Image 1 (cartoon, rainbow, N blue to C red):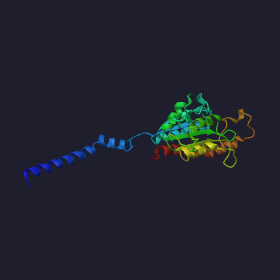
Image 2 (cartoon, rainbow, N blue to C red):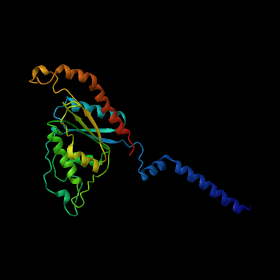
Image 3 (tube, rainbow, N blue to C red):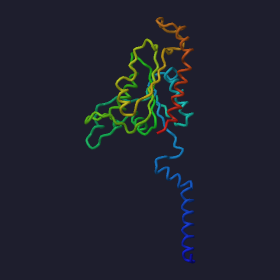
Image 4 (tube, rainbow, N blue to C red):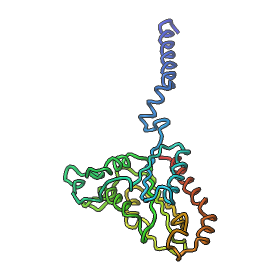
Length: 253
């Protein structure tokens, strides 16, 4: 091998080593992860929507337990209490259906608008409501109108959300597993399944309506029986909510 050929091969060898070292550099590795949509240490954001009126009763406690599990799993959690907000249901303005301007996020502007925009970019969604007269609360139903109607196409009747994400539908109720009139989230559950994916359901049955039954006209209920059921099931219900939160936080994209 003559001197010129030796120097050429040596230069190529040095270049190869330099290139390998560069590719292994943390900054280049991070850039490659970004290109491949694998951003390192990206914290998931989970939106928790409380459709119950009472801050310290069953639905709030179940959602708090879910949120604690999600936080332990490494997620960022944002809790929204619908009863604290001034908003309306679907206004039938049809702004989300305008030709050339169709949107799968509600275009009506009020206090709910930023919440709907945050949900569109979230990594998980949890809806919680007590069951009144067999249904979720009016506030939850009103919220769901604004969330789901923009997903619906009147061209082909498909349901398309801005992105798929895991969903938990949580209910608390006075009824028992054997005797209740709950329709849960009703037709909205179909919309959620079609647009976001099949939801996980969490139900806490036979919950306390009040903390002191002696103060209210509730003779149709046995406080003793309620207490016994609660002692046997309530902590388990809270644990199920906590586990569901942790599971959602750790779920793969």
